[in-house]
Amino acid sequence: MSNDQNPKIEIINSQDSIILDLESIKVLSKKAHTFCLQESKKGSPLRSLQSLEVSILNDKQIALVHEEFMNDSTPTDVITFDYGEILVSAETALAQSKSLKVSLEDEILLYIIHGMLHLGGYLDKDEADFNEMKIIQERILNSCFD
Image (cartoon, rainbow, N blue to C red; front, side, top):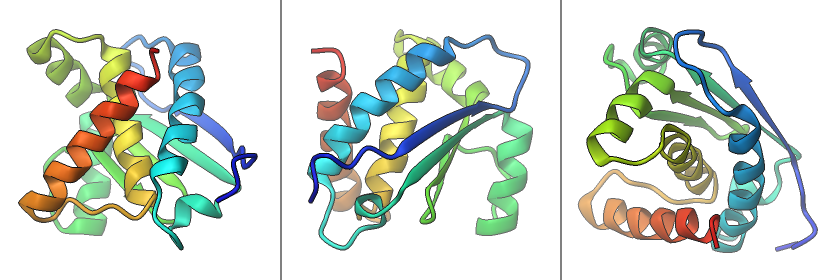
């Protein structure tokens, strides 16, 4: 792993119903990338990507992608593609952030970290993998604010 790898991270806000602090999300995403890279598995896409694109969508937009690629027409929090695209739902993040009493930007950052960990070779299909990933993403999220 190369610690000097610093891919371009582009944050694109493709929804207009929720106001976000995009600059904060971008700065924290770059910080999170460093931690995710350290946790990434050998041969994972995250280690070789030159850029990451994070698109912030609404529930309707993400549900369309969810249906097209995973045959599930419901909205979801995050969808990750191995070529470096991470899609997150601002509406899902807003609902979850209110429920958990955390900031919207923190919840979106958590989704971005989750996507980066998928790119880092982590899966969450079964309970053991899900729990491992959850522990790592929470540790990374907390590290972003140290």
